[in-house]
Image (cartoon, rainbow, N blue to C red; front, side, top):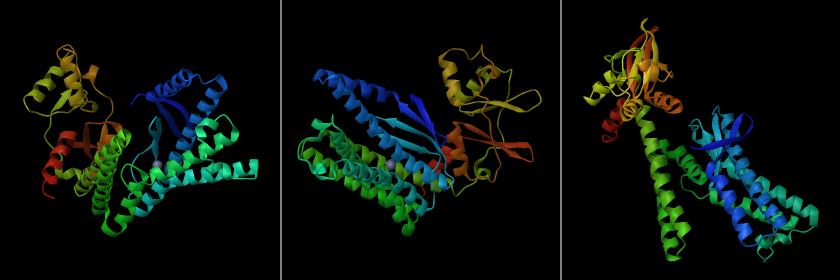
Length: 366
Ligand SMILES: [Zn+2]
């Protein structure tokens, strides 16, 4: 993802997706096209900035509550459609997931109430909140600005509580169901409820010709399935360990060998990912399938040695690690093949294709 880090708070980088810049420009363009004057435009941009500050604080609600359970947050990404706190993993105890999921929307409640208090302190009155005039027209006043920001937080709160993945409400529902049904069944039910809601959404949206809502409905429908698959995959991988699938026979490629050696094996249906060794028989790097394909496209298979092209990222694990644990490590670091080590000796390898084969075999059996 093309992102730009703009700040770091509590050791979590805040990144902005490039499309967010385009979004701001679009608004400035819109403002100028309807002949918004300079000060109105500044109020308007200040409002957008405040709105995204609320979104960032919402994400920090998730991130900081996850930290309490030892779950790190990789980063927080802000895009025009909202924020995402990318957690390293989800906490597994349902009660923890519940608290992490609910912490985000609760931040919006706190912000909303605090702003209500400010509004009250300024005016000794809260009737502005239900003013019938369009608040967008009064954005260029402190009251209009506060009212719109309070409503924004109310919408953020309610929208996120829709009980369908990937909204927080979907996770809250899954956590509640998991307490009684276990994680896999809980997720299946939550996904089903999310899909029924999505179909309802789409039906209503088609009926009212609201194309934005149709789009959201389809998105929710697809995401519900994705979440469901994810949990099924995790539960399968959690039941096996590296020893069950590792290959003890594999090619040892020397750093001086050309990429052609590996590519030829790969093309003939051999291994897809390779460990590279130096003359002392130590692993010095990795050449994954993706690299081989690229090298073939660039026509450098014969002119390039393994040493010049390999990735230095080496993942070493022991054979008693669960496949789920291995899978998470490989995903996090973007690694295609792991070296299995016992008493300092290399005893085997596991790569992505072996994990995929294992999944294929077991998904059907469920
Ligand atoms: Zn959230």
